[in-house]
Amino acid sequence: MFRLLFLLPIILCVIWYFFLNKNGVPIKQGKKGFIYILVFSTLVLSFFILMIQVTHHK
Image 1 (tube, rainbow, N blue to C red):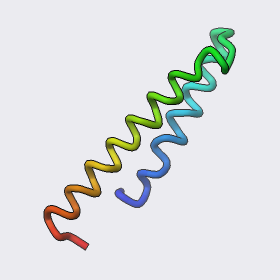
Image 2 (image 1 turned 90 degrees about the vertical axis):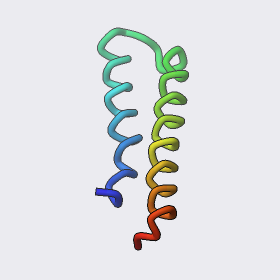
Image 3 (image 1 turned 90 degrees about the horizontal axis):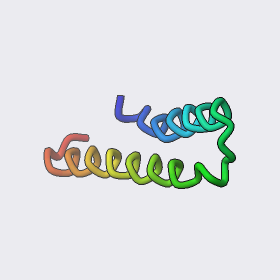
Image 4 (image 1 turned 30 degrees about the vertical axis):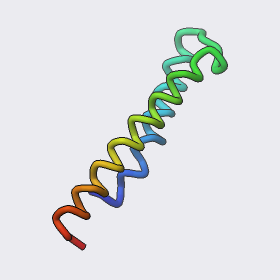
């Protein structure tokens, strides 16, 4: 599962893109949502990396 976490931001960004298109919102206006998605995904990945380091699991 951990090795598939790189898909999280990709899937969320695609969903956000389709949401913006469906509601007629320009991508430039929805840029903040993409930033939030990337920050959230970075935090999730950082948490899992920290947990691996703490437990010394390889």
